Amino acid sequence: MRSRFEPGHNIAMKVPAHEYDTTVAFYRDVLGFELIPLDNDEENNTIRFKFGDKVLWIDRVATLSQTEIWLEVTTDDVEEAAQYLQQNNVVRCDDIEILPEGFKGFWISSPANIIHLVTDSD
Image (cartoon, rainbow, N blue to C red; front, side, top):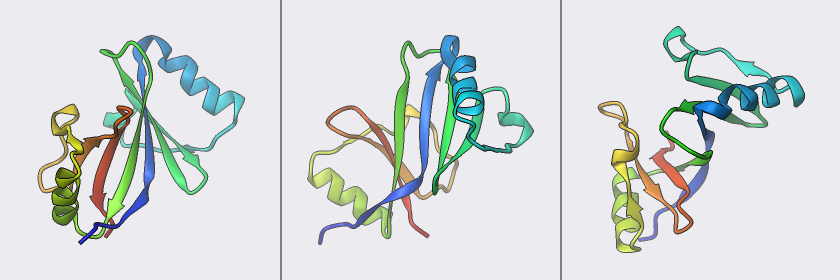
């Protein structure tokens, strides 16, 4: 059986620390995108904007030298999707960012090295 995938609601932009403030200012001040409030513990390293029907997360990452885009895709059966992707030689990269315990999802990389979070559509 072939797993079904849909675009998720989140786009993450992982930005080097030296470009973070100007990147945030671009989306906030130049484009005028609407900010989405965060919990206090996230405010120094992450900001969110409404991006149409999506959420654009901009994360400060001190160890990066250039910006990366990470995408979310959803599926109705995470375990089946994991098997399907493995059968199709898709690279899993769960160590890239630790997910919360009990979270139904995992990380993969496309052939072009774009990181995708595969998560439950529920």
